[in-house]
Amino acid sequence: MDHKHLNYFLALAKTLHFARASELCHISAPTLSRNIKQLEDEVGAVLFNRDNRTVKLTQEGKAFCDYANATLASWHRFKADIQEPQQHIYGNVSIYCSVTASYSFLHQILEQLRMQHPYIEITLNTGDPALAINRVLDGHEAMAIAAKPVKLPGQIAFTSIGYSPLVLIGPKIACPISEQLKDLETINWSNLEFIVAEQGLSRQRLEQWWRKKNIHGRIYAHVAGHEAMVSMVSLGLGVAMVPKIVLDNSPLKEKVQVISEAEKDIPGFEIGLAVLKKERHDPALNAIWEIAQSLLTY
Image 1 (cartoon, rainbow, N blue to C red):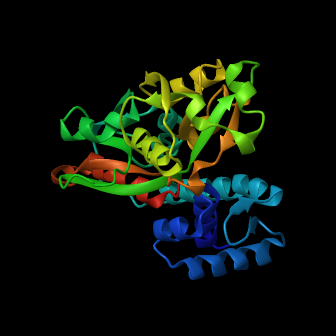
Image 2 (tube, rainbow, N blue to C red):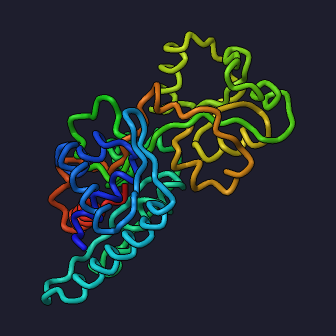
C-alpha cells in the first residue's frame, strides 16, 4: 500500500476538509480526492462519507486510522534503523506548548527524535497556547507548538503539523445552563454565560462568531488554557468555544455536550511549529523541524 495514500488519508481524517488537507499535503483538492478514492478501492471499503458541505469518517475509516498510523510509524522506525552511520547531533532544544499539544502532536515528534537523534535533549514548558508565539519571540523557548495567527510575525518561521476545528460545548449535568440547551433550535445565546479564553486566537474567533450571530456575550469567567475551560463547562458554569482536539483529549469529555460545530461559521486552528527564522540553522532545532515535516500528525 502506497505510503503517500496513507499520509493523504491521515491528513483528511484529521481536518475533515478537502481544501485544508490538500493545502497541508501540497496537492490540489481534486488530486487528493482521486487519491482517497484509489485508497478506498484498494481497501474495499468507504472510508469517508462526504457531501457538498461535510466530510466524516465512516466506522471503517476510524478503524483504518489505527492501521495507517501504525504502518507509517513502522516505516519511519525501519528507515531510522537502516540509516547509514552519520555524525551524531548534540544539543538542547527548549519547547513550549499546551498540555494537549504535549501528548498529541509533540508525542509523535519526540518518538521519532528518540530513535533518530538520541543525543538531542529537550526542555519542555507547558502553558497557555495563546502565549506560544510570543514565548519564541521573547527568547524564552527556541520552538513552540502554536496556532498560526492571522498575521504571522516576520521573524517567525512556521511549518504546519495539524488542524483543529472549533466546537461549542455545554454541560451535561442538570443545571440552569443545560436547561437552556434542551432545545438547540431556540437557544438564546445572549442569555447564556460564556467561559472565555483570556487572550489569543480562540478569543478572537469567539468574538468574531458573536458579531456574526449578533450575540451580546455574557462572560462568566476568563481562563488561561483550553483544558481548564472544558473543566469549568463540565461543572455547569457556562458554555465555551474550544478546539476540538482539546475536547477529544480531555478526561472530562463525557461530562460535556457539543452544542454546535462552530466550523460551519468560524474557521478553526492551523497548528504548527514556530521558531525564529535566524535560528533555523541550529542542527538540533533543524532535526526536530525536519521530523515534524515528515510526519503527518494532522
